[in-house]
Length: 380
Image (tube, rainbow, N blue to C red):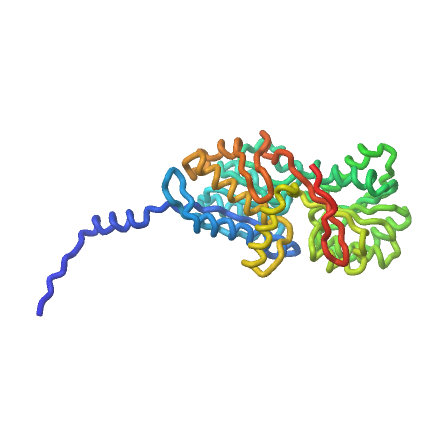
């Protein structure tokens, strides 16, 4: 038996296929160090990005009345500036609609020019180096306080609340480490003009032996040591301080405000020995939203939030909201709406000053109690 088959002309078939797949796909690049010494922080950020995109797609997010689909392009910069610029160019070549990242100041700053030249908005959830938003790039934003706020506040706290009078400072020579250390010194001197900075020593972000610089510091008999750098160096540094009999208090920024820091430092991070600050924080009335996010994160990943996953989440939601306000996902069209955004996120109200810094950025001070981070206070 012969069957007659109706053939649909190719042009008509393609037209049907096109209409069936007309949903706009919006590509968001996310960059963080998912390898190297800060991989635990990069993975935390990446998880926050995945949560945001999955929730946007699940609720059928619309732009100009039409449902869109968000997809992530995940890149690893390994906390390395050269790799950071390479993946930034890769995202530009992929024609992403926006970028969330990077985590480290040392990768965000060189990458920011690449995004700016391409006209692609970049929101960092973690970069604190003041220079990041001081370059005149209109595409550059951050959702956390900068080093001037972070380091300056810690400097004031060290002399005002902790009574430090003789301070030694160590940094890891990265953009972040140097920046936060310099701002700490400014803050301490402003709060107490007579404070003595008895030593300024340097290491690097891959060092493991600090005996030489710590021996020098021990001879200065400081009552507080400030470290500008990350937990992978700060933890062993504090452990070796104790082994050398240096009894000074230890202070640092968000880089050491992690659970892994306490594990690396061991019993050297005894109760009340360490004060650190996260470049972010929520007011009491905002705490429930943050607690809900932390619970959702824990349920999804069976892991605790490290630091910046909620800020990544809010950064993506802020970018999506600007697109909706602009009725377009095209960078040139939604960028002006980012500059005037007011988005109520899980971390608080997000809006930016003319340079791209978050307005009224908060800090959260922590100490360690029995190896666990314990909140001291939120300051603005």
